[in-house]
Amino acid sequence: MSNNAYLYEYTVGSQRIECIAESDEDCVIYRAVEWSPDGTMLAASTDDSTLRIYDANTQVTQYASGEHRMSPLAAYTTIAHAGTLLGFAWYPHMNRDPAANCFIESVRDHPLHLCDTQTGKVRASYSAYDAYDTLMSATAVAFSHDGTSIYAGYATHIGRFDVHREGPPVELTQTTPSRRSRDGLKGIVSCLATNNTHIASATLSGQLALHTPDTQIACVWRVPVEYGGTGVTHLRWAPNNIHVWAASRQSEFIVAWDIRDLRAPCAVVRRPGRTMQRMQFAFDASGRHLAVGQADGRVVLHDLNALDCDQSNALVQDDPNSVQAHGDLVAGISSHPYYPLLATASGQRRFCDPNPAPNCLRVWSVPAQYYCA
Image 1 (cartoon, rainbow, N blue to C red):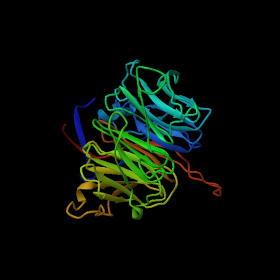
Image 2: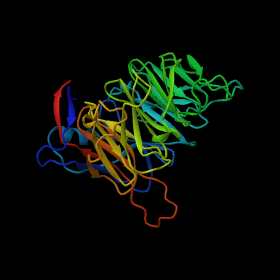
Image 3: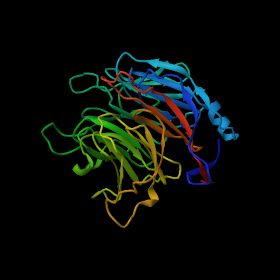
């Protein structure tokens, strides 16, 4: 892969954002999509509790060689689950080496499973139990930055597992002393995001927290009510590892905080469309552009340098570049780690629409400039 980083530059010449790959499955409802750390595969979760693994190495290789022709995407590994698929995460050092070609997944009423990407078979299981010796289902899961630990969020706990040791967690921290207590992190843990120094978590009660690597809570804060603090559904660190961004359900805003000063948000991006569904967002490698999917099927690229840093809570300009990526809500979006390629996936439940728009997974090439990382 390339050793250079990229910066979206969609205003250069007559170049446009164009679709270079598309899946042929239009009967599924996509929930999330993520590029693998080595940039050769895509993992997509769907509404039927299935995880689909796509080999995108052909499309990436064609793009790297200058060929931008359209090609199909076909899932070569399909992993169905008996329970609801709650989350998944790639192993951070994942590559074509069979030993590192794996991911972690969480399924309701099941332990965490470390699965082989090629076969879908379970390599290891990690389980946590409450005070009544009942198995807890992880509602959020993430690897540590170095890949040696697995973090799992539960209804009232956050646990850390050693990747090399199956079974119970190394640490299991209660997020609040009791249900009646006002201290700690309140609500079901819905999101986890890790960087090289901190673990960020968020709950369906609209609270966020920073944790030390041993899962202890360092600080807790809440999404302001004016930005829809009804439950955080997606959480991501910016590439600078200083800003943490969060999106909430039934909210038209994506909010960012500087972890050096958590008294108020440092940036807010508007995303039209109120929905209870989880909707992802992603950054380019430089961290300058924020790619956001919308309920109307558009993908919008926000230039974060347009933010007036001297004004607290200022909104990013409301006239960013956009493309009509799908005919329905864009639930999943992920940026390639090495090339300016954007993966998007669409779908939402529609009960009264006799002719719903077809859903699919697409890969887009975005005009960009490269620079030495």
